[in-house]
Length: 304
Length: 191
Figure 1: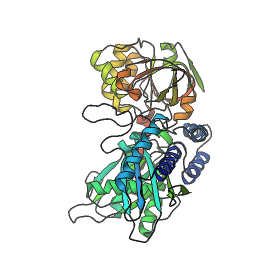
Figure 2: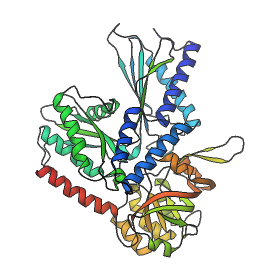
Figure 3: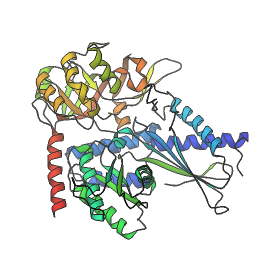
């Protein structure tokens, strides 16, 4: 059983979380960077698309070197914790808030949390719904370690997220995978460059309106190189990337042959009456990282 | 690559065409949602914006505890379309010559660009560090009561990289790309 009232453990966890946050905000993981390099190489020399990708690449390197935010919109702070039975969730939440306040003072995070009624900026990134922490308990005795994944999702890309209810007359999409495909391509076309393309689609088929958005974000935690365990969805993921790039929206919407870096699709059961297709668009600055903590709450390994 | 240097003139703005890649050197003023709402509602500005450029940006700026000087930690563009309800009037009221943002703007702003001889520059979204490096000084801050990201920061920049996507002659790269991608989408779905 982990006791977060123990001063040593508390200090170690604070340090581990701060390092996780620093790296999440200032460094892209290899899977993301590799695709960005590929995209840069594939755009035409002298084009606006190549120019955009060049600045993007320079920015990634500079942010890493300076330990500074890749993007000034440090976004919604999403944290996913997988833990053994009996993990002190409330204590963890309080410590996480301390770390976020500290990270905001250090400039790893922008003052980014606003009261929706008074419009007042909290100034320290703490408030209702922020940070957004999701706990998941392991089956008893199955695992004893703690995994923490963090994702920073900015407002520009969050604003182009979209949810379809099928059938949809406007885009002639029925309740089948072909209908899903139409919805996803429509989402990419509607987003244009506004979500800071080339982006990544996190998708959920099914669920209720809320759980569908939640799962679509969770899909963004997947390694971009992985394969969907469902063969049909795996094919669809690759097809969506290929077809989206044929729209010629390009980086930043300047035109070009790369609009989407990756597409990840999950599914939840639905009600007979509902068929949602939900898209969470992630910008090229896909800031997500994760750690495995040892029993002393030190960072044991990185998940990406 | 075209260079646009301060002080900005209407003539230099008129020469810029959608698709041009430009490096801006001189003054820019940040302004995002709250600033636009303020300028729109009050028709006044805490600083003279005539012939100036507004940058849709909510930067990360920290004040150095010892020197009390402001330091720009990150400063990329924010989505411009949210300012669509206000931008036309602000061009009219304040006489700005340029807007820097991302994602492009709508028909009303495009109309304002033609009417008031103004141009829309697209910066690279997310490139907060490359763009912060091109900011050489923080010269002043206005409307700081709106909170740091929403305040109006007066900045000096050098070789600030942007692409003209909407010009003062009525051309919008966003409209062109949208039309083309809609055609492509139709073809993909029909095939």
